[in-house]
Length: 264
Image (tube, rainbow, N blue to C red; front, top):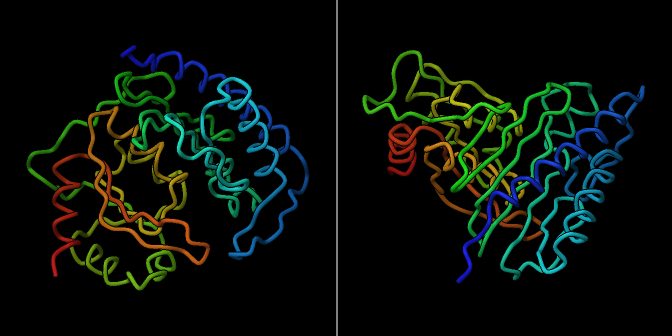
């Protein structure tokens, strides 16, 4: 069997993310970004739609036998050996309110396993890329998530998403467990939290009710940096999309948090 050339996929993704960044920044310069509400009441903007259309078209033009799963335009050939995941703008609410922490997320899965990922914050100029076999990089610098065998320290920060997210599916008890477990907990939103965990600023990030386009890139990036990604459970949203409950970051701390959360 011919070995997979992940480096060539990485270079293709780099080019794609760079071009998507240019598109997003050109639209960011407009005075007002229009948005509508989707059926699930989350916002979608012209930037989301144009960015995903561009990325999808480039992928299928280059790799017509690959699959694509995107937040805005659904699934194409999901049973393919290679499937790309796209969240064109993770943090649309931030985008339309001129909060620059939103990001474009791109992932590549091989036989359903995340292998490569990109998280790009166009306005902040922050970008992460990499994955299995190629390493993980933050603005070109290699990232190593060195394990802390002593567990949580007083200066370590745990990241979570907001109470409303945990409330979906009745998981508020998990948030209260986390808040009682460690004094240094911060609530971050969308891909910015993932970038903080991948780069090592957060010891661990715990997120509930994420979709595949939110987490596939992150799993590849975390594992490429030597960190640990743990699935804590799954659910379904009203549109029958799988929701992932996950913890990721430095290995020993992820294991510690996972054990605490899953205990009765």
